[in-house]
Length: 343
Image 1 (cartoon, rainbow, N blue to C red):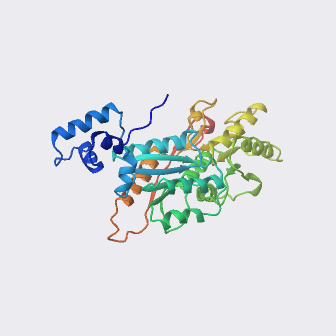
Image 2: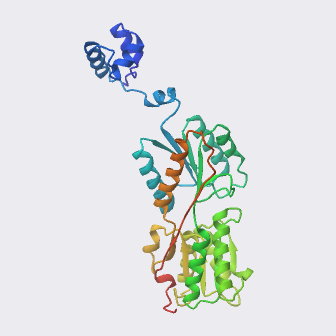
Image 3: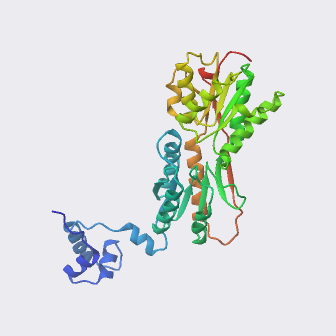
């Protein structure tokens, strides 16, 4: 049978003391005699009293809690972002409240309300894929809660953000495939209302142009980037009169789907079709052959995003601070799936 949680009022009533006296005694206030402090502490231990740190913090005008909204926590990227973010927050004495939108716009809206109701001191957000309307984030700013976007950001000069140089990631991947001798490179792109996928596609286009080539519409397929999308896209590309000799995908999941189709068809990787993905998911080093991918440096991104958020939380507001954008450089992890041995 569960016991009712003891409160300061319970202790005060039992000892016939004022609630304020008990509160000061529990915090070790010097104005309370040692005898009284000892009596209060002894009864608190007997009743298994647990202080409500959140309530105490809220009385002081802050919760010591920072919120993070992510599309999902499965997979390598967002779990490593959280690792980096929590390391910075915890070191500074903050707790972290995590919500997942599960790539759902309505759930993301609910996440925002949850964070506001929890009275968090600041919020980090990476938006869901279906999100086109960003007005629900206005509620956060109207309440004066510091807000930082990361990875999937709202493209606005008025907002604080931490992002990867996705243009450079797309450029490096495509240039690498071109340097391997590939000349008919397809692209699996993500939803083009999200800046990260626009930038990855832009890097792909730039690399082709530098090699005197143009983007061919039949080689560019946009989707939600899941494994099933990669399978369907690969089937579509193989049905072309002249199939591609390489694919740069803006997601590791869709390139994994493409790999499965190629293996089912008996095609060799990279000799027949070279593959390069994006995000450096943990399975990239487990596939056969290992998958080339862009490392998004997620732990570094998490640390940078949380550091920026905490600077905003601690900002006194005496001096207007211009919105800041932190850009992290990607790393191309070259593995067997793209290495044809040419330069």
